[in-house]
Length: 212
Length: 307
Image (cartoon, rainbow over all chains, first blue to last red; front, side, top):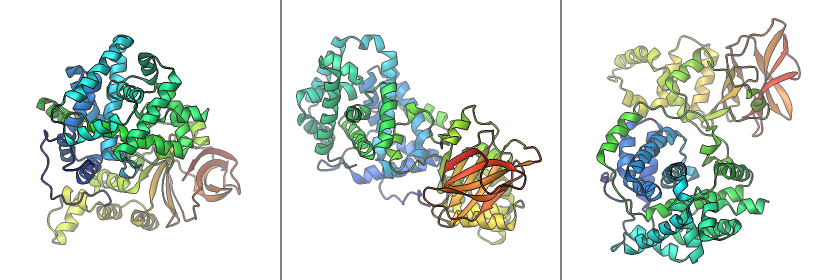
């Protein structure tokens, strides 16, 4: 059958082990395809595969959700919803259309963003709050003493952006602001925010070596 | 205008659009493969940004409650109809609209035996008429396993007997999972119902690589469950829950590609019809209401859907 997983010779990763490249700056292909295989098995309703998938990806998705949502207990709720959605949607995952990593991150990010936009709407209308978030993001990136290979890779790519591109993308992705909120916080026209985000993402795509 | 939409691929990939804008952009992406490809690559890029975060293990208790929850949660079975969740369908539209898993066992059982229980909504007519969104195409590998599961109970005893007699040993669900295509065919073949011809066609469809399954809603209620293979020039259609017609009318199936070719009459509400016809890449399946005995050309079309 097309979706039967190949026999795996790799020992399973522990939950705490991050999904980092073992060497160099390129994502680990074998880890990526392992996640895709797990996702296919999850799509066939295999709960043990879901358990493995959770062990391999929950730390990263929790970090992503928490970065956007910020509140720990809300983040835990969101994480559960994210994994329930992964379970429900897994039958639709098609590795030919994109990476498993990208697919689960999209689900997690979307859910986190929807949550902060509904839960946190009033606080977030305050532009000063957005600027504070931006400052924290900067500190965050710089203060990680010994950065993992993956963090270094992303930080390097982010440095290739103009300051405006970088601010706009960090506000949108890591803080979950909409492009119109981004425009307001950075005090730039909406059209400018859109094009900065797109131009910046294209730079990041090329810098991170994403192929579509 | 499209240039402005094109500028929004980045915001789309970062989930930075509100719901209205998202819907607008996804319509645009569905029509512009270049923009869809760009949007998709930027979505992948967003996922790469997540890799830069320091992983943080959630509390272990979360996993146990989650595992308990998913064991009670059915997986999705049809194409997403909610535009707010069609996150990946826009890039997908550039290739071929196709998604989904089989219905749950219960749903499959319903479809296979008594037809659709819930009639289409009031707007199903317009959806059906413009090749709408209610129809679902299910890849065959999914269909195989759903058939295997749903028919499992009814054939379990027979299968167990067969394997014991053959000395193969105890039948296990694991073994069935490894070999589900064959199991499916065995299961279908061991059913009493269905003519030899039907079983032959089902076997041929099961064996074909390009077989797909599709559910087409009728504007007047009921559905057509369609399984077809272009390679085999074979199609089997089960009507499900079509309303009864007066005795001077009949349902008629068509394969439409420029012109409409007769693909058989459906005189019973839950009848199975087989067709051996060439299906071009642009072919559609249609259903119409005709005077008893059928017509040369469709009169009153109540369902049409791309194959």
